[in-house]
Image (cartoon, rainbow, N blue to C red):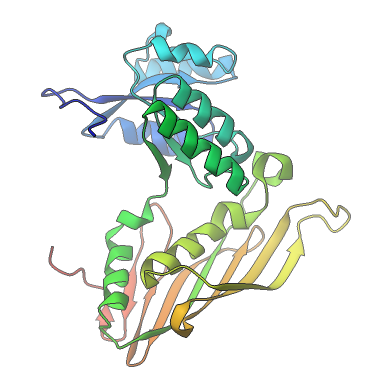
Length: 288
């Protein structure tokens, strides 16, 4: 089944950004000025004061501006093919489902949702509508990460037997500190990079997980998000992965050990500047 008709020359898929926070402002919007197959076609925001700046910079027409109350009317807009949901985590499920019911394909920011039941509902809604659902996780396609995955899976240094992944930031603010909106602390935001890396590098999913240390963001509030978390994952065959994530410490590293060598990315998860080295020197990409 083909979801998309063939694109005509110079035709780009129209994307509407739902949520005009920091990620949309600093990453998604500027990137859509450079993409080959997509363009910024619409905006969805609950902050009217943000619209003039976006309108001037991206030339989005008034007819393609929506708020959260009239969002469902997007079904009638043929300029918009895809809705990119870049809202706080607690709102992902609602707006993915509403976008699907409006007949639009959806890209949802990570984490996909707060619970597995919400994820199942999102998947079911898109299947029922015949629309595609993607989660905005980028490092599966980063050449540094695909190369260390190749090194591990092809046993370049022998069998992989240990991974250590760390991702943390001390510059966190806004809704990410609100458990009702975020669903959790740095694990939901940054720690998932560690989990994802372990899964695609090993080509497996964990069979056991053990939290080894945690600390609350607010000692006086038992409902506070965690400030930091350390955990261990065991994979089939005995691979052990030790992970750390934090909202109080800067960390950005992925290190793997095998029988006869090692590899490392540091920084490992940044938008730019990812750098790698191995037991035999600096990381070099394999020929395509």
